[in-house]
Amino acid sequence: MSISGNLFSMNRRGIGKTGRAAHGTQGRWARWFRRSTKLYLLLVLALWLLLHLGADRWWPATLILFGPRWVFALPLLLLAPLAFRLDRSQLLWLGAAAAVIFIPFMGLRVPLSRKGADGATIRVLTCNVGGPDMDRESLARLIRESDADIVALQECARETALKALPGWTLVTEERLVVAARVPVTRAQGRRIMHPPRQWPRASALQCVVHLPEGDLTFSSIHLPSPRQGLSNMLDRKRLLNLANVPLLKKETELRRRTAEEIEALLRPGALPAVVAGDFNMPVESAWYRRFWPAYSNAFSKAGFGYGFTEKIVLRGFEYRVRIDHILTRGDLVAERCWIGMDVGSDHLPLLAEIRRSR
Image (cartoon, rainbow, N blue to C red; front, side, top):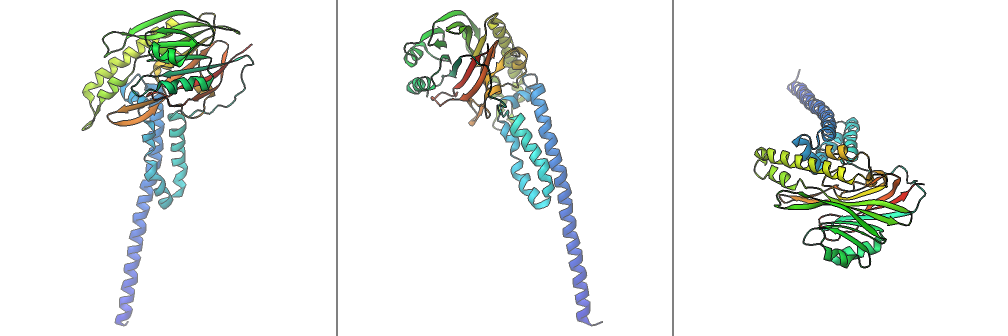
């Protein structure tokens, strides 16, 4: 055999070995990637289960409850392009993980039917108007343009309510407001300690609204916030400051006791009821599900989207959560629920159209 023939044979064997090595490396990457996509889906399912079983019961689940849940979708930014390159069949697993995150885990709502009761429509508006940037003119315009019949406001000075609601019947309890275009009778209120405040703060105001179709009880509520405990859990250097877990647990227990007390206070008896306001808890909270099961959530039933109402800023990181609700009980049925225009508060308004069944 000639020298050139030997060289050709050696080169061909070398190329073959290199090709097989490259193919083997790619195969190992593909196997690793297939395991990773399945592991990611299992992780997402575990997080969803943790949220629904442990939120407000176990502090890691409480962090997820009040945190930006969309961050768990960030691995898709890496995994999806890799699927196109390594194994497109894994897009099915990634699609399943994305569906779990963006639908049940983040709380996407889609109204299945808008057909409800045949009684008169009652339009309800609730908004926590606290914050230095709240604009009174925007609030007045929101109420005017929304054509609301009954309004619940939280963290609202009486002077602000009077200017935003001229000619309305107004009942207040400290910074809680119930206002309507028809006569309203004050029923009861409750003030509860909200640490770190040093004095009790109004947590509930219940009234009877005298509508032409009949009376109903209407309550504006503001339950304690988890902000202090959550903020103290975060640390710029260590991410989580585990030394402050007891503070978060103590705050969570206060929120549980307050929710239990307020729900017991507001039980309406024979009249249909609406409870609206800043609950400071998403619907996945164990305390929400324990103390408010007799009520129907207007946005859960008749809203579209995620219903995020509060802008949270923790250690400079900003995101939104759904903690403001309109609940109905008795013969009241929510037919539509939506987020209103920004009035400069750190909360967005929530509106609902409700009918009385006959």
